[in-house]
Length: 113
Image 1 (cartoon, rainbow, N blue to C red):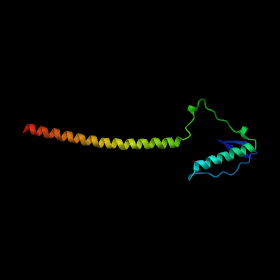
Image 2 (image 1 turned 180 degrees about the vertical axis):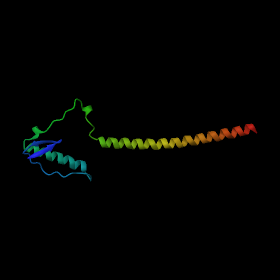
Image 3 (image 1 turned 90 degrees about the vertical axis):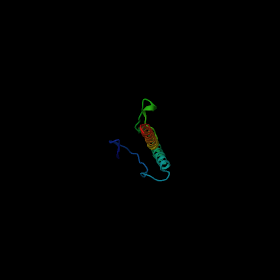
Image 4 (image 1 turned 60 degrees about the horizontal axis):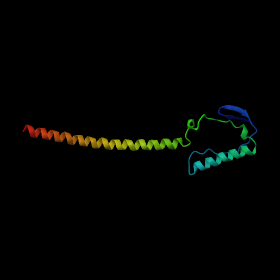
């Protein structure tokens, strides 16, 4: 049986159970985790785990975060909050400047009278 992994073909006699593609829904992460364990169990039962490719990194710091998308979503929320706060401060500063300009104009007109 021919299979592909990372675009490379290899011959295998491994029979894997059907695992449906999980796009969204309730408990998606739990279902995907169960699917991974199902695949590992099938490979283990067929004595094929040692044939899996191994990926290594020099340091755990070089590997991407497991929760990369959640981290980015949190970062985006913080940036949006900061933008809102900057807008508020900008409006307050503009009001202060208008007040300062109007009081300066008023005091200048009083002195010239």
